[in-house]
Length: 263
Image (cartoon, rainbow, N blue to C red; front, side):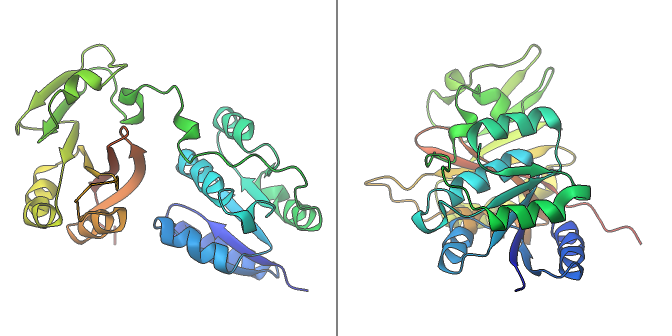
């Protein structure tokens, strides 16, 4: 029987390349970059035999994907195989998803077969996707490093004081200034995002842009979602590569300018 594999990777080109390699080994493989809750709902509706998550890129998002999978009753006992990744970061993921298989590319095929034949009997208790960020200062989650110029665009009142763990030499400003390293742009409505995204994208230069929108909370009226923010950013020539819960009220996606394809 051909095993059905869902391969998760955070770069579309690499996902295709490695997914095709897995297909050549005799598996029935589907691969795509996860695009929010819809991805996991569809996965839950048609679960594969094994989920393979590549940790060579954005290991924290690979960890969050595994935690999201475990939120669903149908997928609590689904075999998960993590492949690759920095050993130190892999150890932290192992502490949260202890029952998964951890391997390298050389040993991936027997790991898949072993995991499929022996589904976890005692999987990790369902944890929030934010469990991996517990205790992590906000500055670190946002990628603010020493001697970083941070620009706040339309922040909520008092937000500056909530950024804990700021490293030495950090300069935080409000209003646009030249060549910021990190921009935190708080957007409250879809119309505002669409109107200003091109200016933000073209002004970004080599820095990073967090687009931050209100979470769906009781009484909240924002018409923004993760998918809307991502699609709008992509259409403006940006590419997203990290998601973050800023606090109980705000979520953010991190974007950078898309690099031109070398010919």
